[in-house]
Length: 272
Ligand SMILES: Cc1cc2nc3c(=O)[nH]c(=O)nc-3n(C[C@H](O)[C@H](O)[C@H](O)COP(=O)(O)OP(=O)(O)OC[C@H]3O[C@@H](n4cnc5c(N)ncnc54)[C@H](O)[C@@H]3O)c2cc1C
Image (cartoon, rainbow, N blue to C red; front, side):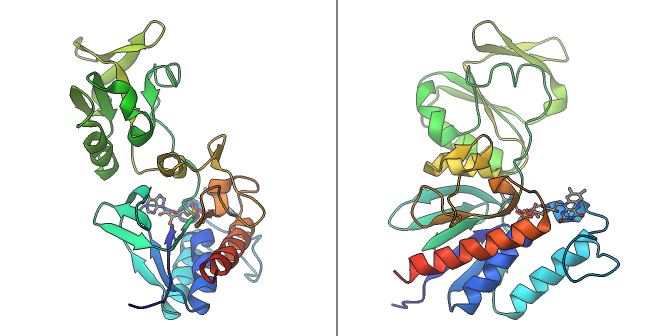
């Protein structure tokens, strides 16, 4: 059996790519798993990052980083991460497969937002949940709805099916007027005038955000950001986080620095 250690880095923005450069150059089998946009894709011109007189577009900076990582031997998988688990080893679950790994760096950027439908914010913690693995147990034998249409919504529904009596899929968010209830969520009301009674609502809109993944494996959050110490380590051994998903200054320079620190800490951890 090979004794080369594996690290899986979620996200290929500046934090993830920076981490991958350090990990791969330390002789670690390094994989970046990436799905969806980086904040860099929206940045027309970056003029405050070291080394680019006249600025550089976010898209080009991102492409250059990924090319640099690939050139050093980093594997890049285009897969959507939908879950994290600790089995015999750490496991990163994607829409395509499950990847066993020795360490993980979460570098997924900022938290995604819930859709702006009346009732979601109001009933958070009162029937509205963002994590089937965390809260599904409370809905044994009950009727729950899963809001969302992608792979992430499928995986959340799949978690709930063995527990809930009925799992309703709300995959067309445009059809929903609002969520209503009294002390807790009770109903989804549709624009066509119909309604469906529910005991709980699980938000699985778009791709899994860093907070969604963190909750699944017991990583502590600080608000909607991942809580880390000065080594960018989370409270779960072997799992680190870097960049916008940890809060603070939401800038490329901080993401690159976080990635370097997270990888350096992970390398130390993997070498025992
Ligand atoms: C409009 C705009 C302009 C900006 N201008 C500047 C600027 O001038 N200067 C500056 O320094 N900063 C700027 N920023 C901020 C900068 O872009 C971010 O701070 C930086 O990109 C954060 O890097 P990150 O690696 O933490 O996250 P991101 O760059 O957001 O990367 C996150 C990565 O995670 C991946 N990901 C997310 N979810 C999943 C999942 N479920 N499975 C797999 N992969 C996933 C994404 O595909 C992406 O690769 C700007 C941001 C915006 C939006």
